[in-house]
Image 1 (tube, rainbow, N blue to C red):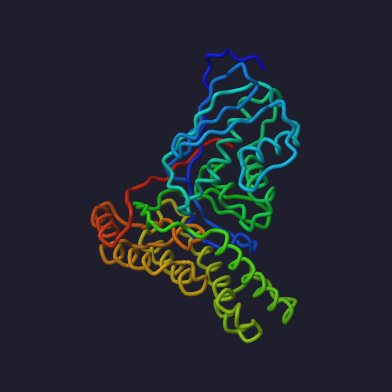
Image 2 (tube, one colour):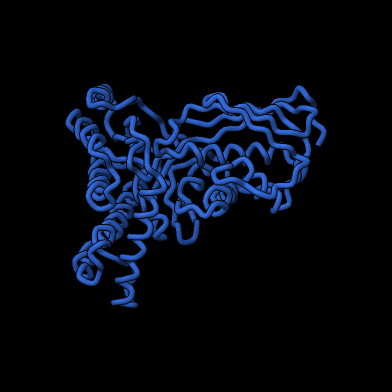
Length: 361
């Protein structure tokens, strides 16, 4: 590759919101998520140094990657090197250096996947500047991002973030197979609220994953014919006695959240989903996240209750929890009141966001 040294490469990747199915993907249960108009931006110009000189403007940090150096060790959380290592193992080759600037308007450590957006954007950049001709589909790119961010570091997360961001649509994701189905983006008016409380990703995820898996294991040991994909709400009490006390709440959440997700999928398969019905499902999902997964700090409960009293149809915490952001579904008429209610209840920031979709396969 011999680019013109004045040529500019620009890529981006969007944040994601999980609407239904939080803490379900690592149980191989489906999720519904979509991308919003908050993004990570990467731009780079070729240099003569055979190095990637990265300027992370928003956090005032710099990083240097020598393209002549073999990648023998990658420190936890170094997604720049994990992505580069992954693509090299897939046959990618990189020799041209770049001066690179990374910026964004995605809240960090807030539950809307700023890290996954960075991984997807960085992979898109590397694919643009490679010497070879790796050309993944957007679905394949999502899986590569999952490999680079989660599997590479043996993290406890699922694949929802990377798949959603790479495909840039409102998606129903079958996490057993990785298959995705596009749903309608006509959900209504959305408000993102930043609680001001940093999320506790790894602690919440580890507990929820282990407890959920142990709950399902206990039911399967009692009834080998039990199929979670055919589970109904009445199965919660049917099998509750065989689930150890420590895992009972997560058993309830697994079954009921699965059913909520399927109901939401049915609504979002319509051309004009009923926003009020979606809001009720969102509130039901949040109740389980609060009381069973226990991932919602008391201050965020106060903030969401204030939004609901101001006219929001539904509100829920986003992501793993322990802090971070919330999303509210409302109407244009109530939008300003809901934003002001979030702020009055102590939210760091609150503003409208729009779903974005891509026609790229």
